[in-house]
Length: 326
Image (cartoon, rainbow, N blue to C red; front, top):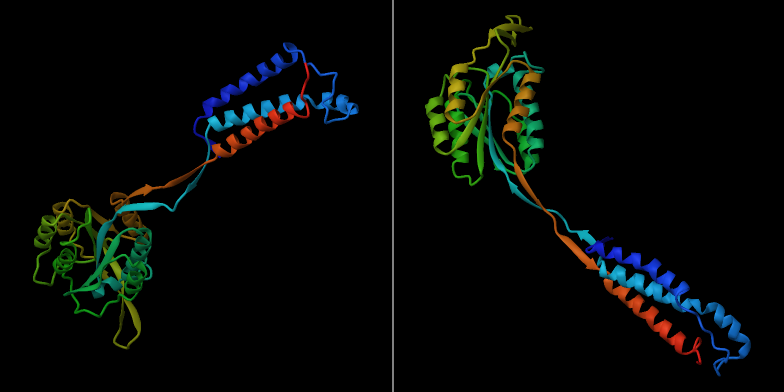
């Protein structure tokens, strides 16, 4: 319980003054002639309880002061959230080079795992998934059903699309999914470990398209510097690893990001890729306005009622049981 007008409690300071005035300024007179309805033997008992009239008056004054202070209780209704979400398309490279094992267990699985963690943290955003190799495919359109998206993300693998790296097609597909969005902010997160060597759309041209629709494209180069172990088979069918170069076109990825007002990141290990996702999350925050509704219940009436009853009881006792004959 709280009080709307707590300053009225200063009036409680008059209580000691009233008490002093009662005991030292007034003479309490008792009638020697008992009221006819009562036996005279009760006069001494009545005089002992005569002070109860004063106590009732003090209680009534206190209750009135509490009522003036406006006691209230508040209950909070369920929060109403006004969300200004972000629409995000993740473009995942699924070319065969993503099987390189400079990330554990490999580049693709590490990228998927960290993307799932990122999706789980973006509860208020619509997120979609595009995969690309030499062609591009919409794995999942923009959705707020992140459980479905995560299941689709976990099912992503190489070999479903013709091998190659069509970065321009990946960006273009994402732009097509985002261009009609009414979201305040629209972004693409593109992961690749190679160079654009397929597709009919140049990555820079695709970046220009993204800029026209105010879509920021964060680009991430995935892969260690130098060479990376790549699983394969020797002539006898045994599992072996080959050292393959990491050919990431960083200049192109930087231009794509700069053209759209975003940032290019290089992740040469899994922990660095996790840091990249955290950095993107920091740069692209969802705005949430929290609205709470307070239900206020007034309780002054009950104090007024008891104050009235105290005054009424005092008057009844004063004119009956404690009636004085002067």
